[in-house]
Length: 144
Image (cartoon, rainbow, N blue to C red; front, top):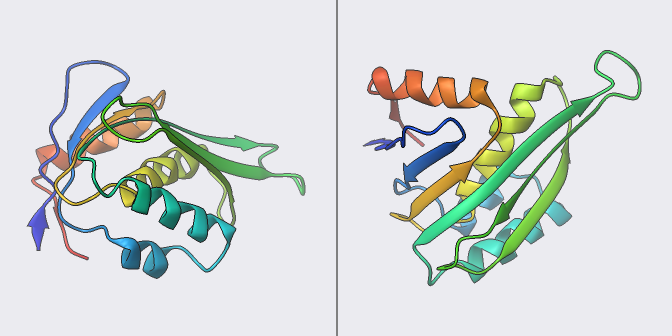
C-alpha cells in the first residue's frame, strides 16, 4: 500500500504529481490488453527509463454520444525538456463518457514514467482536476 502523494499547483489546468511506486512495463502488460497500443506504451516507458521529470499535455474526447457512431479517444504528449519527447493516442471502448477519456489519458501518461518521477499534467478537464482534489482531501490510499 502507498499514499498517492499528489501535490497540486494552484493553476486551473496544471496538476503536479509526485509519481508513487507502481509502474513498470509489467503494469502496462497487466492493465492494457495486448495490442499496438500496449506495444507503443511499452516503447515509451522504456525510452523514459533514465528520466525522472515529465510534463504531459493530456486530452480525451467523446463524439456522437448515444449514436452508433459514438467514438472515444484519448492521448498525451510529453513535452518536458528533461525527458524524451513522446506522443500517444488510442481509441477507447465501452461505457462512453468524456470524463473517461480525460482520465484514461492521464492514467496512460502515468503508466509510462518510472517510479518516483515528478510529473506535471496539463489538462483542460476541470472535472478531472476536481476529482483529484477530492481524493487529496480524503487522504486516498491506492493499492495495486
